[in-house]
Length: 308
Image (cartoon, rainbow, N blue to C red; front, side):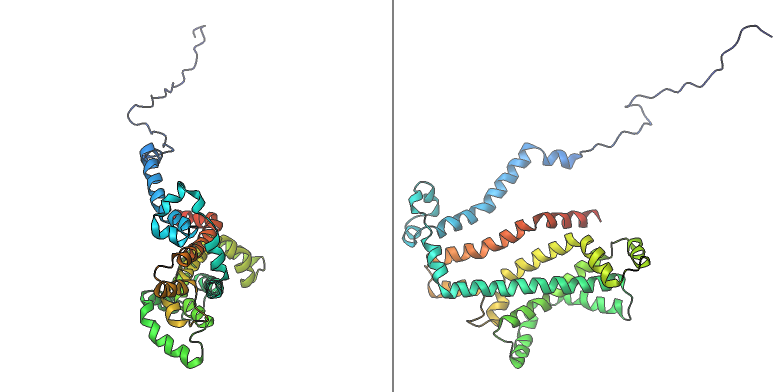
């Protein structure tokens, strides 16, 4: 035996360079879309688009603060060079007009209950269609989905005759019921599909812990579905608030909303900008406040839907 100790040979591993063939590259955090959106050209384009959308709103607001004679003589942009034109006299006269104020509160009485009823009923029905077993569930859901293709114009005349027979024609309740009936199919379809994405294991664990269906719905499903519910509430409120077709047919002079009241003012006094401009801006500012108040939940709903 040799007196020299030989060291045990171990395999030597070498790390190939990052660009060598057969190696995997680390995924980049930002792709082409992220680089494109962060470029200055795209940001400038978005600023231009935002200015184009904001310009009519700014013009309407400045016109509502100017006297009717100033609006008739020159454009609203002259207010930037002559701020003395601006005053709140038009809004003071608007709020003193009993017809406009009544129409505004009629709009609130139509839009808010409709949104609450549509969201509440659709949430209950969506949970039932998604997680409860009952006879004819799939068939009833297909009927609900089929109602999405029925245009609103088809039901105007039959429902008007029905409301006239039961005494609901020309009332706020009649307008609310019509909006609820035609808003439910899409609302049920949307919330059912969202609730169906909730993991089944969470619901089974809640049932094993002794939770009733109502407790599971109120304590588990509703908090998880808050983004979708907020998105639905925003869309439903905006649609009812800005509606004029249904209210023009089903509401009378005492229950007409703000859109119909402004339309009647335009028909009677075509050049009455002192009433139309502040009334239109008042009708516009409420949906903007609602949207910005629920903007965070709306973005969460859109992102959750894209991820799923």
